[in-house]
Image (cartoon, rainbow, N blue to C red; front, side, top):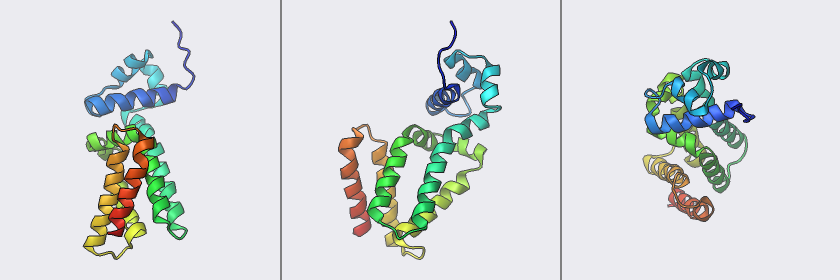
Amino acid sequence: MPRTRVDTRSEIRQVAAELFARQGYEKTSLREVAEQLGITKAALYYHFPSKSDLMRGIVQPFIDDIEVLLAEREAEPLDPARFLADYFDIVLNHRGVFELIIRDAGALVQLNIIEQLLAWRQRVYALLVGADANPARIARATVAIGGLQDCAMSESPAEEFREAALAAARAALDS
């Protein structure tokens, strides 16, 4: 039966992300991804020449969204509440990718983006509590951001949970 799907690249990313999250990056083969989609390995290689290219294709939209958020907020006076809301929404929108990152950080080594993720943390701290913040302020920012990430990954409906999560993050910063 011929495939009727239109966006093969997106489907490949989606199926691979699910398999990577469930089985791990190293334990998932491109053959498994192709079989799950009902395409040949050659068709998969046409879209993604290697497994690391596929992983980058999965993670890159999340990276791009975070980079845009940080660059925009670094260029203007910060509204912490707006930043926290935007950050929550990005993690929520990329929840599958974020879960993959948490479950299989070793795969990120393959992409050479661990340093970038660590740099993000410093940029977030600088935005929320200042570059020279004391340990207590950094701890508050860590609790705010970490809590938002965890809440975005929650099984609770996002619409119901969002405002409570944001209020808790703001409270952590204001303590």
